[in-house]
Length: 75
Image (tube, rainbow, N blue to C red):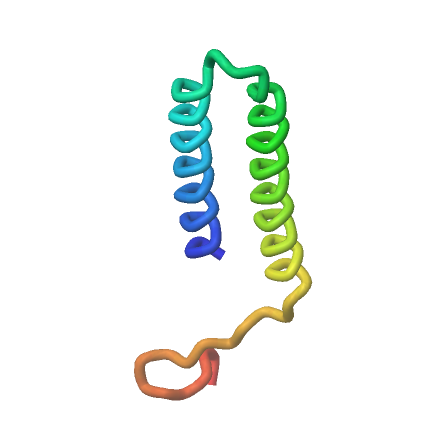
């Protein structure tokens, strides 16, 4: 789950940076409201991915990891 959260955080930073550069580049054009809507849509999608990953993790049965001797913990 931590890996997914790191990827989502990285994608959010990249989307924000892209939106900032687009806003600066096209500040004089009337298409700016569409850019804001697209940015919000991308952020919503990233939040959905994060929530879905968390839901999958919470719904998954707990894993039993072997200890260093190769036996199951508690054996």
